[in-house]
Image 1 (tube, rainbow, N blue to C red):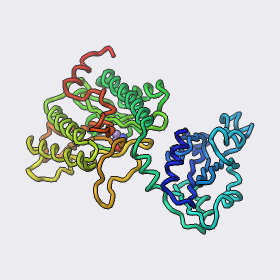
Image 2 (cartoon, rainbow, N blue to C red):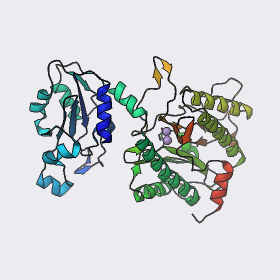
Image 3 (cartoon, rainbow, N blue to C red):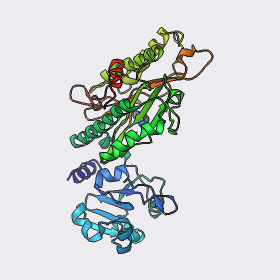
Length: 409
Ligand code: GLY
Ligand code: MN
Ligand code: MN
């Protein structure tokens, strides 16, 4: 029902002659006969609820059709059951089901000369085929309307995101409790792998488990170095549950105790993050969390002499403070409308993730070298303000040191 309601809502915003075409990828080969785990395309799944690979939905005000893989006894013995053309209409609430192999013959029949076609091609072979078949039409993008819908989460979506956030938060707690000096980064990653699989979820993105200086490489994913006593470890990891992502970063000391310089930097990031989260409420400018975080980090680094007054912050903080979160970890939705920052609305979900990254540099006091800290939470805009979906996961210095001094989790 939920997918049907979304289709109805989307169609109500478009002209009567609109035809929406959405595809989901065929299986992708990793190597040899091995495929990557399949995951439907987010826009497609949002509107159809169909989880099989290699399908195309054709949606208009008059009819709803799907091209999909037919039943195939041999392939089903190897790869599992397919819904097939007979079951598809009742199961997916379709008017018509077609064999994906008949795309060339049938697609044109679903379109008339005055159809207004919405189709956003991605870089996959199926989409090139569609683009070729529709070469005589002027194709419009569905993103402006569909992605605005996806940006505002329904209650059921927020519930799923809360569950994903809880599972990821529990994994971060286990990692804090189980880390020991000498452990390799990948061993600490295995805490997340195991916890996510036990909860029937998977990583929403490649996790970062970065000890010491590795935390200053923003997209570090090798995760293959030993963790040293005296260093911090930064972990950016979150699970995807039922196609909804969580996205959490915590940074903590490998030996359970922050050094004084680490505490100084950590507290600046935490102060920036808390103030940024506090600014999120309906009607507030979506750029405000970043501005607030930058101001606090700038002031904090000036106070301890790492920046001269007014000196650019960009060598220590070079990324944004957040992004929309939903079915995609960097979720869809515009940040600006008419070249102006938009304002928060109830149901939007955004990450808040300031950081400070101090690489080795002769001009910087060595006590701060190789400290990389980020703290990231997932925040949903509510009627009056916000709720931190990842709020159950500890992040103050005292909380982290207290938890890490117990060893029996
Ligand atoms: N984990 C991806 C990000 O924080 O943007
Ligand atoms: Mn993020
Ligand atoms: Mn992240």
